[in-house]
Image (cartoon, rainbow, N blue to C red):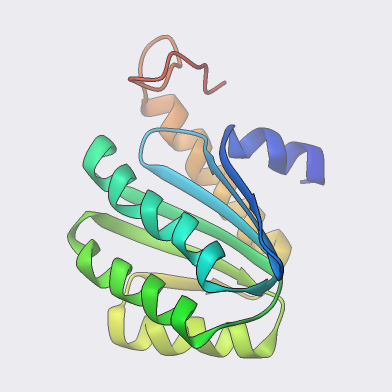
Length: 159
């Protein structure tokens, strides 16, 4: 799956934030899905973007399946990691699973460590594995979704 296909799979861009150290982009491609991409060094400001959307998706959609493309994230501030871990724990009931692609060893280590404590976190070894799982999950969700293929509540087409 190429970049254009990935962008299309991500759906409607709901947030794009450039901070001094990172770029955070977030999409909601289907009911219960949250797809993030982080490039650079994730700071607290960037983490707050994701932090605010996790409980919103759980509240609005009743569940969350996260797909986090952190392949271009170099590292993160401890405060950013702590904030996202705390938010995940606070919303754990509504989180079905969270899939991660990490390009940096330190980011991969952090995801593994959090997964050992929290559970429900899947670290993909390759971009192909990550993108394949995202595409598969979206295909299933769209097939099982509303008859007209629209995400309830936003009027947009998910096809």
